[in-house]
Image (cartoon, rainbow, N blue to C red):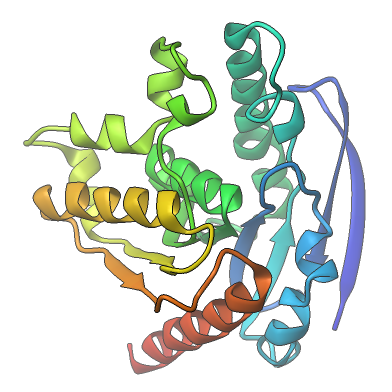
Length: 248
């Protein structure tokens, strides 16, 4: 497997940002780490290992990006507005700098992640569907006010998929675009999955009410919020995705 490490200065963030790529052929996959974690999280937690057969046979290639959650979503102190503004600069870094660096032609990515990574994947997918053909979110939480209690403004709203999707109304070219994409929202029912399962269900219902098909795949009560289950989910759903591509 070809593995490459990058450290490149970001104009949006005015700092060096790191990421890693795995493989160089097949379907492009953009991976967001979970809360406060780094670009090497999937490698450290066996996600690259379980996907290795798909990477080594050229069916998929991964771009594992870095996050700044500790400065934005997770930070307990500091001005809420400055925190969400910093998040927006990170959003711009991903869209305007990272993706153009790694994108092959007009390639559209699968976007994925676990826990907060699942939230980021959904937020990027719904805000910029021109860049992605598939959303696969594992154990995501889809409303920003959970991390910004008692505070709301246009940037909080812009980063709350449950809110802005609920308020999208027909006729809408954006809603039509979503209907042409593949959306998978996966979550367990076990320990630490209560909040994420509820949010996953609400988002699925919002999409269904808009006529947007999403596979809301809720796993069993033994399935908890951890990589032991995310490894199983990623193999299962990427396998399904590749089967469908072959069939098409």
